[in-house]
Length: 522
Image (cartoon, rainbow, N blue to C red; front, side, top):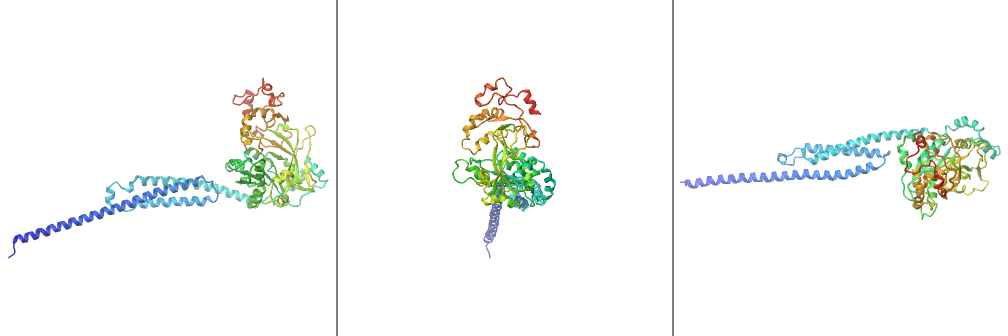
């Protein structure tokens, strides 16, 4: 017979073991559950940290992208960036919609409302919007470039040469330019049989308005303008690309873009800078970079008989003379020097000495001299004082008539640009010390026609528009046609301030007189 006590104990033991088993199961469940929760938390938080790192990296990429100039190849980069941000946004949406353990929601790791995720999403949405806006702007810019490219395809000056020659050649015979050149050619001038283009080439620094004036003046006769801009001054100091900035942003250039071959030279002159090396190196880039590279890339490389003008930006050749040379031939020479009417500060202070410079040749001479443009400028490729150069020099005075072959306007720009000019000029005697000594006297020097280099008046005052180039809208260039008149007793800087006493001269930083204020407003 079984003992009832033993039976009761066994039942109690089974119950206890059952309870222990249940507790063990619950304990294991809790442990596994906590581990799973931690694993999920770590997974999400790891994703958040990864996203923060990716965001930082991508933000740097975005800044780099923004700092670059938009161009044709940027379109693909921008589209890729937009897709990248879009894909990321979709990833975060999926991340927030992913089923999550209720235990995580019950704790404070609710990723749907997590501030870090919200911040990243907001940042992405903002950046995607900004990129879309930029993409739209870029598309507009690309459309403009494509239109310009189409214009370049349409622009074929050789095809229209004959038509223009027939329209203008006969009228040129009555001009003094034709008569003079025909005399020098022994009466042999005749219409050209080969279409001949004119390439006007020059260097540009900060004289953007004068460059625009030049393009406007010569647009009817010049087929291409080759403009070389360096990232260094003639003294080989770093400088801004003034023209590039204006050319890319100003609407006034739109009419001429298809003609302008803008060349940026981002190289320093080799060797040690002593005197003219910087200017020579940059000028040679007209041929080596502007014509041989940029023009070639645009399928606009000159033919051997085409005429190349190589001169300074402030040297303007009469457009009527260029038309005669473009549409007629018959001279035995194919290298030409030009005699310029020389003024300084503006078109009214006329230097009594004429300035003769080698300025024009056919393209074949430049090729024979390894595209070194400075050789033409310096001494006509070594032929300056030989019969191989035709000197186009029409000497006239103001009484007998006017037929200037060209104009050289030295230092013809607003007073605000003098400092940059002095500090970037090629000559070694121009320096910071020089500008410091002269800066307070610049307005007086300009008004009185006293040349800054020797402190003397070396010119006569000729306030007339009869012997000036046909500049369109001269009112846009008041510094070239100043209203303030000089004082007859001021012949050198030593005459200051005595010769200015009792006059209407207004020193800098003082209010102008009523008469001058009226002129500025009108």
